[in-house]
Image (cartoon, rainbow, N blue to C red; front, side, top):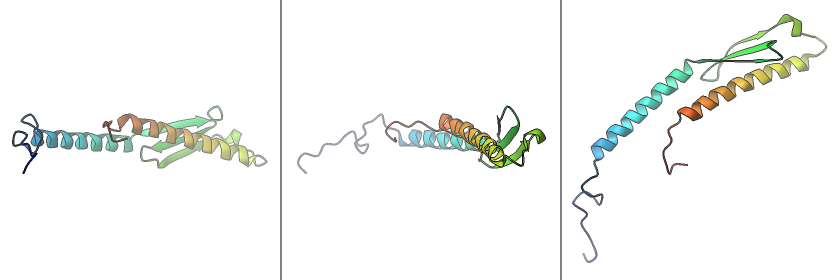
Length: 112
């Protein structure tokens, strides 16, 4: 086999490569990621709109836990405004959750 070189008998990675250590690190990273995901799911996020007239509470899995609407904002002649305030508060909660997701995401060079 002309041109074949043996790199220390370690599959071409040299003597410093430790597959077992790499696997332990990957397992620890996976466990940490799962823990962060679970903590996020159990976290409540709250957002208000309309000067506090509408409040939405969401869990980290993006499920709405509650919507509170102050009675004085309810105007039968302007339902669209109330709808817009609810949408704004829901979107704010989602943005908060996604920000935390990005912060907790593992940064592995070369994957993105």
